Image (cartoon, rainbow, N blue to C red; front, side, top):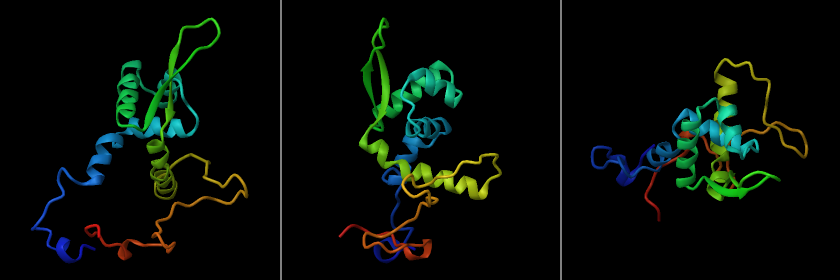
Length: 153
């Protein structure tokens, strides 16, 4: 898969500079991905994240803070009548850009892992199932053997 200058794997290393490595540092834990799942499902409140992901308050606080710091979620103030001002957590553009990754994990898990889920991804407008695919900028479907890693032009 690696061609040209990058083909000699002994001549260079991606350690510390790889975009996959950096992404996994942000969302590579079970709870980070589940918090993001809940954000995609519309969860915004601290207690709801804790309950729906099954985390302690301390773990929820740590995970939400990390996702805010990484720019995937942002805090906004909200206040219900007669209550103090609290924070809710909403998706940023960067958080929304991560959705294909989460959907791909959903799709892969349904296909390859035993599960009791009966849920599927479907297009709201027409009802057809949704599949996550890899396509080039010209719209061609791209398989694993069709990708090369290269330096930007």
